[in-house]
Image (cartoon, rainbow, N blue to C red):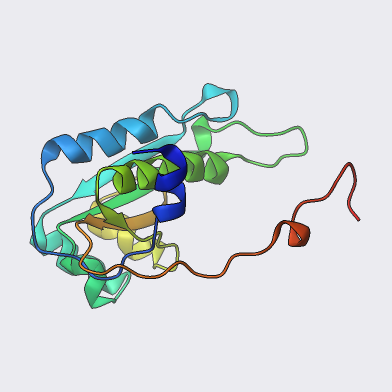
Length: 170
């Protein structure tokens, strides 16, 4: 599939078929995340692939949307602050690096015919407890992963004039 078609065709999917996702496809989307760039090539990310129904059910306490738990797979992306690059002014790039890797995963999933939905509005301490994430590792983002059972229309996007400037801030 053409990269620009993948980018423009990606949608946040909130309804999934019950069809299982082949391990090979899960591996492909994780490989896309693995090869993503990161500040200083530190790669401060970890991914947890959840397929166990009991664990998925326990994640309802962190994000209680039924459609989220009906996907055959849930992926949790975590950042590791001790491994991330920090700019001279103290800004830690962990979340940026995790977001880049996660976006690679989301686009690869789209190319594989799979749906995702970027979830940041969850209870991190519940996710930490349910997934047994150790101290020093932070859950950053979740996504369901599965075959879409809907085809949402594209949402309105800003025009270039609203966010692209030439040489300096206007």
